[in-house]
Image (cartoon, rainbow over the protein chains, first blue to last red):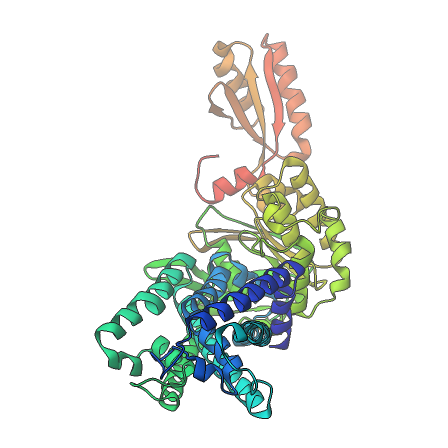
Length: 262
Length: 313
């Protein structure tokens, strides 16, 4: 598995990829911090599950709340990225090539996903830090107090927010991998991924609010938002974990047994 | 499982009743093969004969429906126990288009635990030394094929499995590939190579496996396969009217000619083919017949192969 992880990192840790990732992260940090701060409700309680207020941003965890709020809107995008990254290995025939060098299939898949998650974790950490810095610079213009942003409590909140986002991303990654392994075709996998994580679950949620308790994408969103009126964060965590474990098991079993003919 | 093969050498590849079924299609039908260690074995058969599926089963990519086998003495059930000693290129070379040739080799070397310091040397070997830093997506198909060969050689393997390695190569590239296969085999490697360009296999293979519709038609030394059809003399008189007289003359010499179009085909033993040709030429001349054609035809792999699969040569 370590060899598979290292091989995947050879692909990822190239100057071109790192530059694109760094630029994207910087744009995301600046853009999302600005949008979240500008859209913060100046008074009163939270306007919605994912909304933020000047009051909430002025608390110790306000600096990283900007990050979690902003990143939670990128769920569909991240899901689609992971679907594409795995499915393209089938459609290009590169899984066939990789299996000639690492025939232990579960180690290959686990190493690949681990590498992608390690890279994603590093990018998220950088994004969180950068978003915090940008938010701190912009906060005075929106009357957000940042006095408690640098404190032990703020650090605890930052770590908790980071863990939540990491779980959320990991969940989408493993569910995306499951779709990709089952479908193997990039366009079909992307179509399913976009339709499911985008319109399907959210339209269903609009029509039937309890959908948040049952559907994996909505559960992940509910968890990273710290719970909703329909489902608590802990229940969302447990149910989403069950989906993730089930999906990973299905993907692993399928990948281990299926002929590689492309 | 790695007992002696047909030529007395240990078998590098052995299969017993290996079969693969896809729904109603029996792609490989109870194939029992033995490839001796150290030979260049040509794997031939028409499109859809089951060559690639067989190779995929040997490489652990496809699970056999029935049967068993071993590669380098290790069971097909445990591809991880032998794939580190096998280099392979199967179907089209598949790499990451955004990575350079060098980076692609680094990825698979890391994955297989192979020495990455050999990469520049291997790129030189396959003629990509100057293009190693170019992106794979910009390579021609022939260059991709060469990179696939370099990747197959990364672990300095005991055995190579090459599926149509001359695909996409120009004539010079095909010639290089032929020399390359000979060169790597001289190092006591076993090479199992499939190709649809039979003349290429004829020049490099000392062992042949012929399959059709998933079943084995022949396996054994290439010479024995080529010797299954006799050498023939082809004769054609200057005037077609003389064809019957010429046939009678051949029969009088103790040979049985067969007419094909405007010529007579006379099976002969290779060791006295020149003497027979000279005698027939002289006899025809004495009877006032001029031979417009008189030449020796040795059986080609293609003619043998077509005869083996029941097609008209």
